[in-house]
Amino acid sequence: MTKPLASKPGFEIFKVADLEKKYPLLDLGKMIDKRGVNSEIVDIPVTESLNPLTIGLFSMKPGESFDFLYETLEFKVVTKGKFVLRDEEGNRHVAETGDIILFSPNVPVVFDGESDGEAIYTKHAPADPGMMN
Image (cartoon, rainbow, N blue to C red; front, side, top):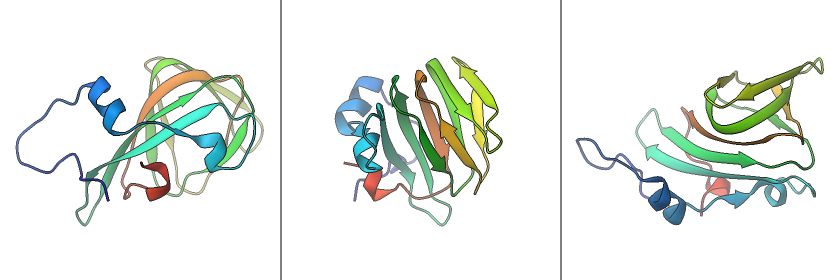
């Protein structure tokens, strides 16, 4: 298992280039077995305490749309580009650079294939071993 980021008291600055080397992004299309999904993701454990915390990096380029069901409360901060999302009723929502997206547990969302952006995310859950290197 990967060592959590918060392994010692105090504060640390994590440079993006260092995180990208230590935690390379994984091909989400392969993970969900859907051709044409042009998206990458990685979970990074922050703590492994009673209330584990995970952060992650997520990117998506134009390609196939995909459905996702969040099992825990999670939020994403769009750091570049845009994400086009559709809710259960098919309503289209666009989150752009600087926007925060809050996902409630057990609510399905569709990531539209026209999305082209990057985000960081956090969730109160252990890092998913399938989304780590």
